[in-house]
Image (cartoon, rainbow, N blue to C red):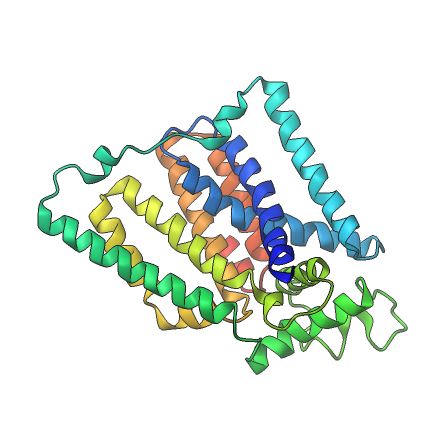
Length: 301
């Protein structure tokens, strides 16, 4: 039962983000359904943390129904955009990339190399998923900066905004009150779905940021170079030790890196195509990045 609730906690925001990405990318024939999924994952988690922050500062208690309702509003709003503009809902799924265009001009040795690299990346992803979904939150700085605050917010059922309280805004549970709340609020969201603060599953969103980061990077490189180059570049990225470490614990650096990269990819795509939807999407990614960590402001600048 916990696994089904966890699946729901990850699926709902991904659905919201996927629909939003599909709306903005509906006229871009080079953006595949996989781009929309990987972009949608980050967008959805950003929307849900922002929604919860707004609920919190409005004094609305954090309950599962309240947060779900905020996401239903997103789904209804985005669906209305499709209907109002007359855009076919089939555009949600994007365009198919033909296998022939992926493998043009390759000899048998490159096929072998592609298979080997793909297997190694798959192994790395499997390792990150296993570690991320089986190890509890273990780093002291994660507890000091994000996890302890998330646990406090979960049991408080909201943001403590009482200026006279010794626990104002999570004081004593959050080492730096100025840290953005994207990370803690995601832990709270998952905990609301589970009905408890599970010290393993509360950070289950982390390894999927790793996967989405590799995904948006791979397809961005593939569009401008080749499948072979994109796979090698993705292998090198996936092999970064610090990236793997952060993908198995609830650090905010990985989400911040994801949003910075997504912002750059969509900005570059706008420069190439002139599609203003991509410029808007780039701004959304950078905006969410600011909410992940204080250093996000520098990426925005």
